[in-house]
Length: 258
Image (cartoon, rainbow, N blue to C red; front, side):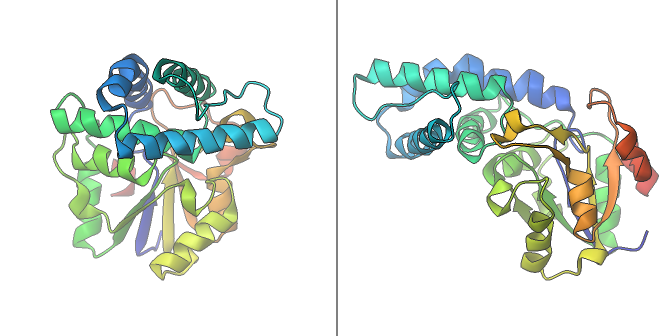
């Protein structure tokens, strides 16, 4: 493979899915009450609640009966209950929605800063990051998690601060990961030809429940349609690969790309 730029997914690619599902998500679910009480009334928290409120209204307007509206008026306890119900519903559906991901990132920032959280990175990732850097390859992250959350995982990792390896970060604000146009936009933003970019992802199929949209697609297929070179990361705990995945290169360790 001949490429000069790498775009990496996080969950199931450089970080075990178990870290996200068994550590990061429970940190939000279990700590939400205390976090709201501790930060209630702060301008920062208010801005993130407003994002959740706006998304909830969009969900209602689009006919999602499960959506939980967050009122503007009411007692603090009434509003907090609505926030907790809203977040619980979205997390149960594993939605890849910007407002939810931003709120989760806000909470994770506290955990990383206190040392309670440390990003878990596969051992085989570091040698390849070093090799790519030595070879002058530019590296980026594109994940459904918010950019601040991405920076926390690699900046406060169990392998140290890895931010030196990455030239930039992208989340779903540039577009959904299952849409070819998202990858085209990334190529344009970083000034690279799509054919010179390698995208590595676990290739999870995204459903309408996760996105709040109809239909599904594969991230790898979308990147390929945009002209990228692609590799599927098959890690323990990842979703099983289906027949569509077999047409692409599949690795079980980054050592296979050395």
